[in-house]
Image (cartoon, rainbow, N blue to C red; front, side):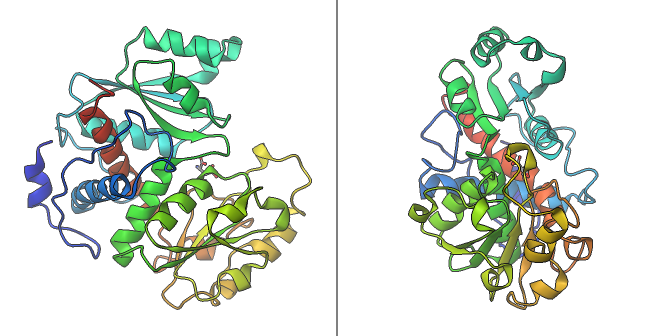
Length: 344
Ligand code: ASP
């Protein structure tokens, strides 16, 4: 990594300039937050912070062009191929990985699943064998089945990054969320964070619960009883079924989309009724701490889990910043895997 640019760039946000080294991971894959130790998590966040300083300092933060650098910031992926394999739709995450890889000097291949043999009935493992023959160094995979990334990791030579597997985990989203909070608030420890909405179907919730509680935040889950996952009690969270009670006094309100693609149809009332009870608007937000900030991993269903006035509130909403910081967080992850065994 050509760290000189990182050191020379003034920080934005409240954090001091960091010169954190590339993060080290004990595993050659990044399959989930569960299984990472606190040092690995903070190593990735600190390194992402260095990249975020550069991206935000570059003035490319209008949400349209979140941080493409030419020439790249680093050569760590020079001569290496990152293969984006998305079996589910994605805009933010796929583009963010693509930018991140190019900023590290890598080449990127995007596999369009809709046009690939996967749609013709090829199994995940056949796909793995085919992809292996292309010798990618890092495989970024999103799949609608929990465990798909782990299964692939056992059958390919590449280092695998889980970009979302079913309801299970979305580790890079949690890392970017934590980095966004840390840059804005200055810390995670001791914060009261409410994760609200469709928890049962959310891999973002699961990864964030692991990560934010590991770093010392107090986590509340707020959702209808029908959208609570089984065995949630063991995760050390507080549970609320009333939005206003659940966000009382919190520092961060993280809203989640109703993921109807993973529902059976009986979990929620009508969307209008859902918004009345669980949708965030300015009135309900008044119950949170006065300085409370709003987050959402996107895509948002405006008028279902959040209204537009709240989502677009420039003082309180971190939603656009999350997208921008995503590139930095993913650069830290790609760099960590490239520096380790996985991409060698
Ligand atoms: N983009 C996030 C995910 O892939 C959240 C969502 O889809 O609602 O899980």
